[in-house]
Image (cartoon, rainbow over all chains, first blue to last red; front, side):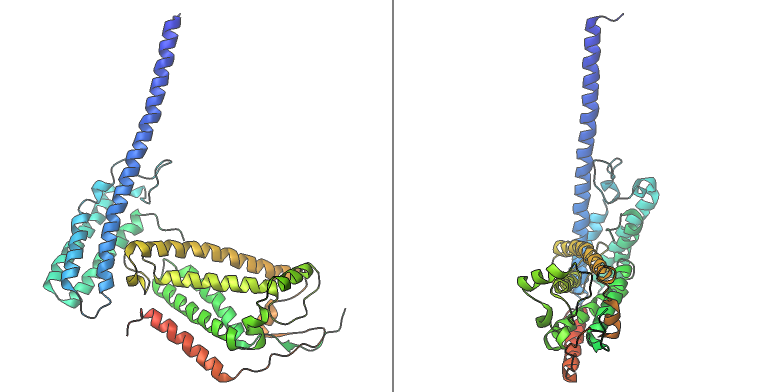
Amino acid sequence: MPSAHMFNALKVMTFVLALGAVGGSAMAAIDAQDAVKARVDHFKTMGRAFKTIRDGMGNPALDNKMIAAQATIIRDTSAGVVSWFPAGSGPSASVKSDAKPEVWSDAAGFAKAAQKLQTESAKLVTVANAGDADAIRAQVRATGGTCKGCHDTYRVPDKD
Amino acid sequence: MKAELKPTAVWDLPVRLFHWLLVALILVAWLSAGKSMTVHSLAGYSVIALVVFRLWWGLVGSSTARFSSFVRGPRAILSYLRHMGERTPGQSPGHNPVGAISVLALLALVLIQTSTGLFSVDVDGLESGPLSAWVSFDMGRQFAHIHEFAFRILQVLVGVHIAAILYYAIWKRENLVGPMITGRRRFSSPVTSLGSVPVWRLIVGIAISLGLALAIARGFRV
């Protein structure tokens, strides 16, 4: 029969293990929440840049330099999309996120959607520098379409 | 039961058209939100035109249309509240002092709903409001959130409005829907009839409301 010492040691070990589990999951939650905040900031950066482009569409004469500059921001930022969604950073009891589970369960599809954003925003940089207004307008729509396309599948819609 | 006289006109045609068009357009805007933003914007601009018209008509329209005839102070409101529980229909034409509060609240909410939509920025970057270029991305996203929240409040107010109509129909035995469609109602003693309003006021009202809605839709660009 185990001695009193062993019972105490078992109690202490159990307590430490439980603390570790709780503490560990708390830290994971903190890390995941940080990841969510970081990617929301990145998406907002792209959103701001795209809004600047779209606001400029209202003018009959387009500002090609501005569009190229803003599109460059989008292109460069978009390179990191997949890396912003590490495993375990999805929505859970302790982490608020608008990412749908499909981001991870359909990782291949998500990567494709992210690639589309990179491709179209890179093309927008080129088209803006080339200067053809009709081509620029079309490519702006195409770039925005990649935002919508990815959101429709991988982002929880704002409540209706 | 008191004998009733023949029907008297209580709501003019512009008021009735405004009411039912607003109902239809709010439904259209609700159903099209996030699905067909072209339809949604059109519905929103139409609502703006309707509300601007109603504000004008509330100044120059027929007696029951005018805010001065039904927007009353605390004494009139309390006095009406004391009789509101009676199981008999009211006998004065137009909105009562308590109903007036509902009218103002609904108009205010609809104004908030439409104006926040004008400055809203959407998540996809494709469907922002016509005046969204006037504000920053972050502010536009704020407007979008308020636009959504305000609709929840509007839904509650509409629910209260419908509940009140049912209360009047069932408890007070007063049909409020019929007169808002036909414009006429029977009273037990004579009431002043509506009288006519000069047509120019209607024309000016339509011009102002359509003009403003069009300008807004174009983002005030020439």
